Length: 191
View 1: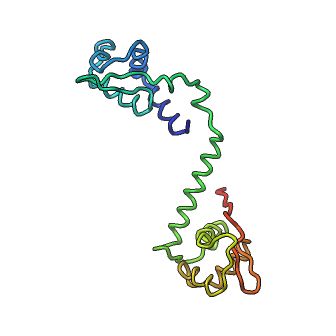
View 2 (view 1 turned 120 degrees about the vertical axis):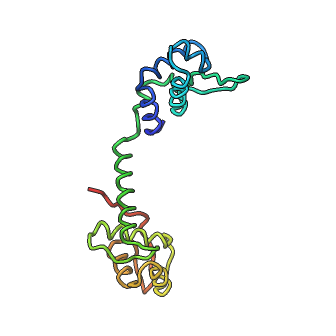
View 3 (view 1 turned 180 degrees about the horizontal axis):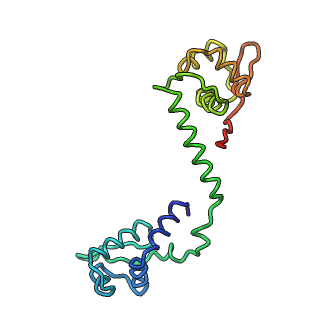
């Protein structure tokens, strides 16, 4: 189970009326009007709560003649609380999202119509920009200087600077004017 699904389930359970609906459905599958009478709630209120529970995957419905009959999703409700709140690494999930958001913000700030406006001064932003450009090159493939320059020029006119930074940052190696991408992905931390 992923974190978003757990949050959706927990939110849907955080309501007295929905807990009453679920409790009533434990006895047997029921249609909206039957639940409405049993719980002394308006049919529209019961429908509203059932939609929330259905969205969270706690109940499902099947059509019987003119009515929808709602029933409990035993697979979800039989899970332990530990299953709902256990994730591989919640902080890792949050950190990866922050890094992705930061990366996207930097790229949006420095690229216009896929062209680099200017090279960032800050090192970690520059690494993000270089990583974006280096993704146009295959790892292990060899490129002569004119081919390399042509690809870089699609992003930025100063191919000499980008070439030099690729070498300095260990993203590429150069031997006899032949370049080779050697690094898969850079690590940029959002401290």
